[in-house]
Image (cartoon, rainbow over all chains, first blue to last red):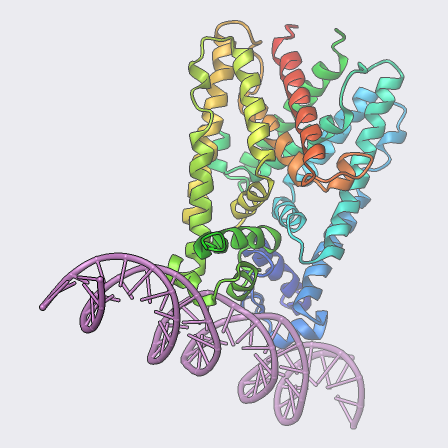
Length: 209
Length: 209
DNA sequence: GCAAATTAATCAATCGTTTGATTAATTTTG
DNA sequence: CAAAATTAATCAAACGATTGATTAATTTGC
């Protein structure tokens, strides 16, 4: 019977990710991780060397799967606008499927304790930005987008809008209260965000004055 | 000789705000605050009761001055678009003049330790959102804005873009490296953000299809 | 039976807070 | 006005609790 074989290593990772997201890295103790995961405290150091080792493992895992997704969109033989819409859809889905990690990532970006972690996140974000930059710049060069725009600010708008949806308190985004953990609500928010950003970029980038 | 009379209470507040921003609330020890401010450790509890008391004081101060600014814009006898542009300008200036606090606020929004603090920030944000909501809705009703838009998502775009400018790593926002602490760079980024958001909202909201 | 996995117990270090004493400034009193 | 009493501000030292980490012993699975 394999179903009951609890992998303590994995249990620690999952418990730690949950706690790190809820109360932050320094706000989470190894004893909490031990209790939440059902593993003995020493197991944390046995498997990961240290508390920070657990954190690094979690972030690396996520960033790796983060980077592996959507990257060859720019090579498709489709218009710049279609590329941009694909990127928006992919980005919204990725982030709203990993809201907990996204919050953790942004928190880490605003701290100065772990520079290596900061650099790792910066690099991952930078790659995504460069991809979007190339798409928009390409659209400007081939004449499908208007040229008097601030490309970096448009990227800030796309990324910032999505982050804001994830981070802003649930109660005030929509009139009624909803929950991003509720799959039905999440699906609705995803669609609204995608529709809005695609509409916004289309109007803004293709309206010649 | 009065010139050397340093207000320890104020010194603690300033040191604590700096440290809380850099390394987070749980990541900052009272001993660090003591050392950075030059005040004895006991002074923290003497003036503020506890470490959390310092934090609450800082946040309340900021939120109060946050709310006191720009609120009667909506009562001006100007067009909805001009109102919106004024709000954008005010919002960008406010946030980029207080980047450290803004990061701290967002970090607190992603944690679950201090629900009272969370609610306080939520309320402050909610008021700003309602103001923008009324302006845009008003513009739609008087026919100056097009009607098939997602108002709440537009608000997420405005707020999210500004947050992203503050939070995103400096090195990747612009091609060359710049520093938001450098007044000259800050001024430039402010103007770019204001210009971009005003242009974006104008094109998006007033382009009838 | 042996290596890997797991445990309880323990470690030094650091945490936020409190203490009792001291100084300096202010107020009260005669 | 000056001596006495009171207050506010500051300090070094210590408090008990908790932190992340380690030990040495035990259990598990092949």
